[in-house]
Length: 593
Image (cartoon, rainbow, N blue to C red; front, side):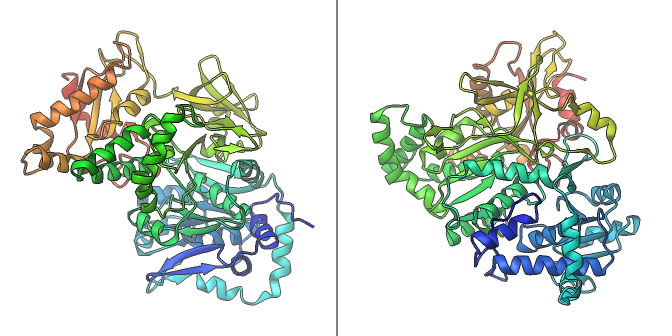
């Protein structure tokens, strides 16, 4: 009898019954890939559950997990915690110790699993101000308790019946996890997701997975503390897909070449970086090789799915794939069938060029509060063509979306959160009449593909009373290789302007090729040739917008915008309020304050 999946911890048992993988998870330790089978995954999760019960963990206790990289231990602990009726609280590793303290206190976490010394050092500075009883580390760290202590306590199976009783008491509608939004403004909010919220999203999303179940490999490197990657990992488990954990973003291509994945997920910024690096390599070519490279790229930028460009285009595309794009595929292992993108808007040029290269990026849409998937593109299922460039696909089954009069996307369905933890007021603000108010604006085309048109809160008025939608301008500007990050400003001002972080990696190479000498980034961004290139990029962008929306001036920043610097959230979204504070001098200079 097939296992019915109603709770998150049912997934590994379903996988054991249906696929029983020898390599459910594979993590690299000291230069060697180490596999964890489905059976070992379950055995260790049960040992964690037994060990936690011996520590006195009760149903509805909160236990935090913080890991710098994705690894099998994270998933084992997650299942082990959930089986006890407690809730897991994943925390972004890169946030400040003050944010650690806030999340731990707000969630009232009593234990914490932490991956490495960098995290432990931050925890040790604040744990005395929290309710934490102990921190257990995945790495061996002198003077610290190790997660093996809980595993060893769980070797004694005499209390497994108690674990089973706890499991049986957990219902689909029970709270499973608190996920604290990275927040572009203010303190993070604790999103309450039930077992049923996430399970429904996984099972519905499975309908759009074009992989051979039980036979394929996935590469995981997005932080699993983010609901997007976490749901995807449950989805992989449900589909019997082997999961390999990358050592980090910087080793992504190296790991991909080692394991040859068939699928991977990322946020748009990472696809942009992959694309930029490929283009930089193309710039280094000479003669006929360079001409062929950019012929293929330009062909790819005109790509339309399902042969819409006609037979002659498809003929040329076949040649481009053989001569050029096959090398792109080889750089990522050579076996990629598709990539998935979420968390923010994906530039159309990336959608087109990677699909042309035979590695289509299926862009979806969702939020932490919706577990997360609301809509998604898919290549083709049962003869249905579900891929449309410039959209985030069709709404998944069982979820209802309507567009409010002001253009806001409203969502209802089994994936919508229970609310914000300890914050009924904010919950009531966003859930009205059963619909979650996303804060995003969108529209449906004639075939019910959803298109995101902006953020209700990010849209602003100039002093002339005209509306400007910054994300639309920013997405257009970032198509320039000279621009890494950009924030459009001008609320209540006479005109829109832009604060721009140049793509320094590209700029350095460009400066060498164009005999531009400099001794510092400050000197580089003041160079007249550099300013002219940025101005030209802005002119190209402005041609697509009304006069009132067009960017009239800009300022460049000499430093790079980073997560550690506070500019970006862990999913690489801009923290607009923080960026405004950091570059107040540039803003004041633009508007002559």
